[in-house]
Length: 251
Image (cartoon, rainbow, N blue to C red; front, side, top):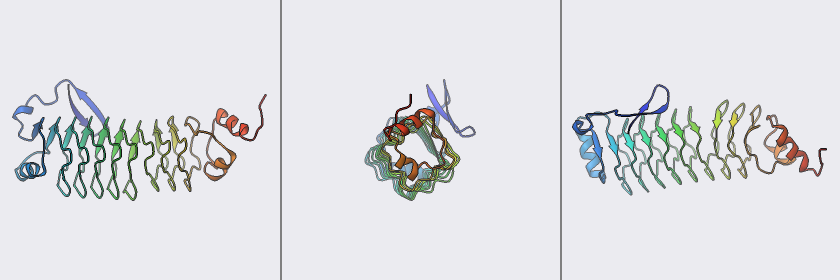
């Protein structure tokens, strides 16, 4: 089954045969170990946005390259360097990129779906209108990233560094933020649909008007509510845990 990305609806659409002429398409590159020199050579030729399937970029230094609009399907990028690369409108499906470095890269309107991005770095990257769906981002670092319009859906962000990001008025679907650093984040009027904030660093995060009724808050205490969740909506079950932390039983 081949795959394409529907940019109008910001979803991944799977079809039985997207590109019957892939073998004849000079921009389609399949099952190769890709080096920087080879990539530079391909980029020097007139081409449509490059498309890669089951290629291996592990350990390559791709910093500064213009890969805008490129498509990556089932590719690997372990410890690959993308610093200052141009990756706007790129599409990544079922990729593995542990410890890849996207610092200072332009990933505006990029789409990542069902990809392993654990321990990646996105320091000062431009992620405007980027979308991560069902991505593994444990330990990822997003400090000082430009994130206007950035969206996460059903992502694992355990222990991720998200300090200072804004999620205001967002619908946050099944985000596992347990042990994440969300200090200074803006969650005002956000709606959490499941997910977890258990053991997250909530220092100076704002939750005014946020709907937290379905999120796992861990061992909720009065101090946590006073410091972080003032003005947020909690469920009756969460309120019972809060009252229980005072040693009071509800009969």
